[in-house]
Image (cartoon, rainbow, N blue to C red; front, side):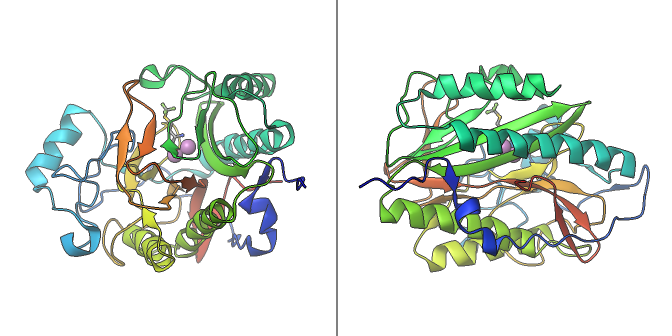
Amino acid sequence: MSQVTYGKTAEEIDKSRLGGRLAPQAPDPAGKVIRPGPPALPASLRLSAGPHSAFAGYGSPAHAGSRHASPSVRQDIAFRLQVSQVIYIKTSAEIDKIRRSSRLASQTLDHVGKVIRPGMTTERLDRIIHDFMKSHGAVPATLGYKGYPASSCISINETVVHGIPGSRVIRDGDIVKVDVTTILDGYFGDTCRTFRIGSVPENAASLASAAYECMMLGIGTVRNGSAVGDIGEAIQDYAEGLGYSVVRDFVGHGVGKQFHEAPNVPHFGKRGKGPKLRDGMVFTVEPMINEGCWQVNVLADGWTAVTADGKLSAQFEHTVLVDGQGAEILTLSS
Ligand code: MF3
Ligand code: CO
Ligand code: CO
């Protein structure tokens, strides 16, 4: 008996829970920048649980399970990586372009949902993603990014993030995280879904649903005047309440004219902590939720992150715009 659920994501299965609040268009605060309190680290950096952790500034060490870095250490890392700590407030013209790029990214994943099949290699799927973006006038942002060799990240089961497409075959029963980022007209759109392939074991299906719910709960806290830490607390409380863990080493990030901008958006932390959100900020919420422990190992390829205990991991990612009393989700499925 085989359920026909190829390409179904938790998002599609749980469509009724899709509660993206669509707030009215924000005014155009052109050129305005917000300088956040704690310095931000680049999201592309592997944020270890040690002194260079993304916890810095977002919650008590006890809550986050790690130590704080001293401001000077964080400052130094940010300096060496030449990452701006400024959170850009996008103009309405920029928001328009991010919105278009984000829509194409979500359409790319809609297309993935139609073609993903057991028996397919991840490099075959990556080629399809590449061609889809190109034929719609976009560039795959990951291709050549800091040396990354592919047009998408495809991470199966115990692979948490940054799975490099290759000869691995997608199997019935797998959960497959497909993360795509488009550059369209100079602006980025970034989104990820966990696809359930065929008859997925109950524990894997539940984990995927929980990751989706975590993302939506995090986004649900977003409004003008809320804090980055509100997102993390909502996600961490829910995930840990279900007995899951939240990956610490990778975080959400500002996005727009660059792939990874300030602020960092940890998926754990404390309400009220971290930078305050303002209308016109655009960032991702992309919780990686593990069945077992939160620790990850990065393989010798320098990219592929796998769970330290070999158990499953699931992820969803939306690009969102802070807009008045809520968030506008820019990467909704159509
Ligand atoms: N799309 C990922 C993110 O959500 C980043 C991938 S960077 C790559 O931030 F180099 F690994 F592709
Ligand atoms: Co991202
Ligand atoms: Co992504």
